[in-house]
Image 1: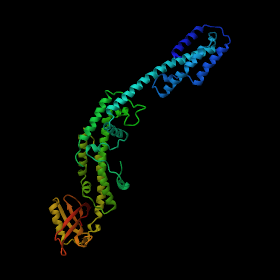
Image 2: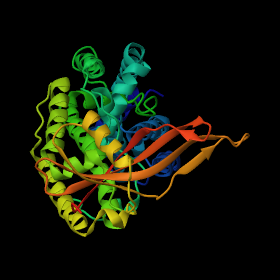
Image 3: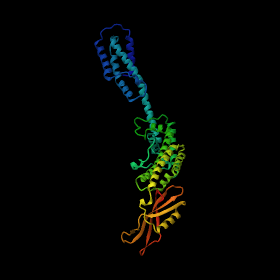
Image 4: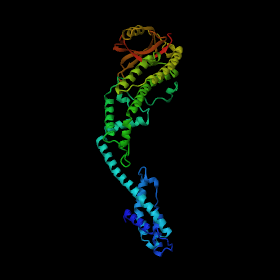
Length: 440
């Protein structure tokens, strides 16, 4: 039975008998139909829930509507079959008032659920229209980057678009124990494409698809949570700044990792470190200027001004601490303790000549020592004929303006000429590793 029509019958019936004053016993039929109406209300759990008359139309509201729609009509139908002679009974009037309240409540809930169904259809259409236009992998990749940055501000997601690599992985756990925790020019083409896609999505989110939400049935992951997409692109300026800061920190970590390696060697090994890292420790501006350049490149590529003061202060503090460790190692190091104690003979002059010819000016040469006293022969694996002989050594020199000397190892090789003879002057292969030490 149509509940709206039934409500009218209930109201008419109640109004017609409100003035009846006789209070006799309810008839058998009246009692039976009253009992049926009350039983339907009780068993079905029909009740007025005022909270559902406003606010979001949740699944609980929809379930409440279905219950009223399925059972309220039956309760009203039973009530309307109560004989008119029984309508003046207080118990009958009480149930009638209860059904009237349920009917009014039902009409409100019905209208809200009906509107919600229309909205659901509109939301579904909007969802699939957005997906058709912008749901490609190209836009998904942009959103995934923004989503990662939003979830983890330290996530280094933008460096690859700015011409930089990701941070180092797999470093030994104890490499950073000595300090406290507290590549070419950047290019803008990849980042420009990234920003262009963000702007396209932002225009869509604030224009044609304004108000789009994540759909409860079809937004199953970030790839289809278009409401989240619009939230991310609308805060993209903030996220890009956060991502660029992480990119700068990522680049700094690469250089700090190299310093970590050097300090590990200074503390635990022979003290031979890469000459580039030694330069950074001895002349900190070499590294800090490089970092400032990187930050400037990132800023230019992204069109965002970054504050470099925090990361530079950290780098300066770490380099200062590394310098203390390097000086302590240098005080205790002399060429002999690295094994270079044998006479160089004719090789001494060759080394000096080679260095003067190929190295930068401004080096003062102190001495040349060999690691081994004699040559190591290399023979052909099948014939046994000599191929070459070699000796390992090191040159001790001092660079202009530096307090300590530097020891740099080399391998001197003479090819075999035949007849028991070797080349009078061989070739040199100098190591990229140096040790900062005493000039002894």
